[in-house]
Image (tube, rainbow, N blue to C red; front, side, top):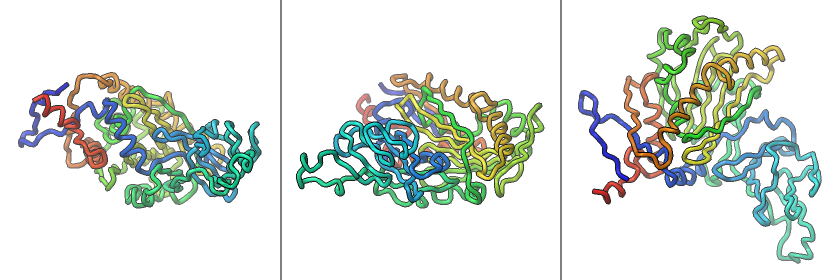
Length: 409
């Protein structure tokens, strides 16, 4: 199938940027993204407050690889493939728990594979192989077997970052200065999670990141139109693009009193102006968003070209009193809870895009052409993302199948 591209241009003759809709729907491109992006870069996995005690663990899947993150007896967080090196079986099957609770086939303080009862400690070392001497004689020793350990760092507000690429460079090199705009808010005091939910959406993961990367869609949110778009300076906020596809957008003050029934945010974060707002978008699929008293962090797990799991975490300060945390929860859920005044509209937006760009649908142009001097309604965030996407995938996002076009001609 080929696509007829009509010329579209600005008044000065410059072509209007667009991407081919097949980058959102083609199965082959999705498989390339998993291998060339998601298995190569640093990814946000969980927050350290989700594993507060030694021997706590969390399991997840990143780019189809089962992962377990364990807080060791030395309190350090480590990440391992959650796969037994004996026969490739999944080891821990619960989403979270504590190794102090022994499983029927194993002992407390160990990760035990139910298949043949091989056991591993919190450092990933093999500590028991049933009848090892009888079966392996001197050809295999438990000291030579271990779970595959993955690069793991805790940074940027206490989040646990993991990479499936054992040769990945330091996290600091990958992130660069992207967090400078909210470093004080994230790193002055410990944070803790007070809210978690997830949504599985029939849409491509990039469409969610696109939505987080542009604010022209604020016309969809009545609350944002009332409290933000009418305020002086809203349209002048600047985007800043960083290496590796990350970007930030300038901060602003939200006028909550412009919406009937809304309340000012009496709580905040260190260095954050009252009722302030800041945002950082991270390639390939995470967003940090502070709105006054609440930090929302979105992380994505692509499940297919037309299916994505998005996890939403709300965070406040660890030292908050119960009343202060309850206030942050109310503030967060008013806007970002499943029934708030913002999040569900974004999810409906990308669900509609998923219907409009299903696998096998007719290829079409998706415009990324708004240019407003890198300000808030400029689509620079998306163009910057797809420049990095092109570098890593090796395909042009607006012409991903040039060989097909040539053959058709």
